[in-house]
Length: 273
Image 1 (cartoon, rainbow, N blue to C red):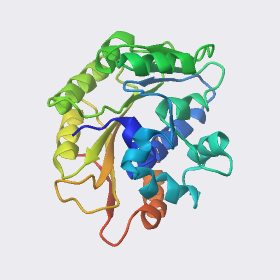
Image 2: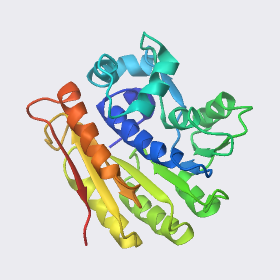
Image 3: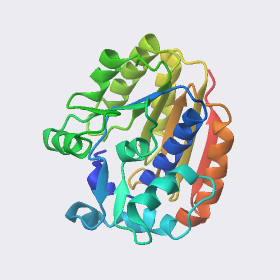
């Protein structure tokens, strides 16, 4: 699997992933104490939907273009950012750094890691001058060991790799073990693409082996799993916020008729030993 964000900006997996991310951020914002977010594979921050990469795949048509016409009540914070960037005409899709940065308070922090030299340079330029954001051109998995725990003591690690590596799930497992050792109270959010059941099973097992007691798995597939095409995506949440399972179920229920069809599926379940 090779998942470069620029080619898939605004597709159905991005919409679900980022709506779920902002539900977690919304829960962090409910408390007055500051929080930190470590984004391990940050990308560019935001994406021009008229770029050659986006137009080459045309995947926005099955994702944000459909959702933009019918904003969801179950994902208000996500829509606040999307609407602020676009107004009434859809042109830009916010990646995870832009979604998070847009809602940070004065003492909250975003640590964005991007290993690709050109993308990392563009990300640094985008957030130059924003003291709440630090951009690191480094391996995001390595950053989990180097930069945790943050001074804020609470927050989120967002792990959203492109799945270019043949050992990606092993890298995620090692990252979760390191994270649990360094910052056991942090929230860990792992995204994965779905063609079949493999990634979901492997990452759920990795989270269990890392030592986390509470693990939530949510999957949203507008298309059937045939083992070849991108059917949908899933998220693993370690140390999930209170009631996030209920919020994710409401999100899936509302999103399914917009992005899915009769052959689509979704599920939100606790991962048990």
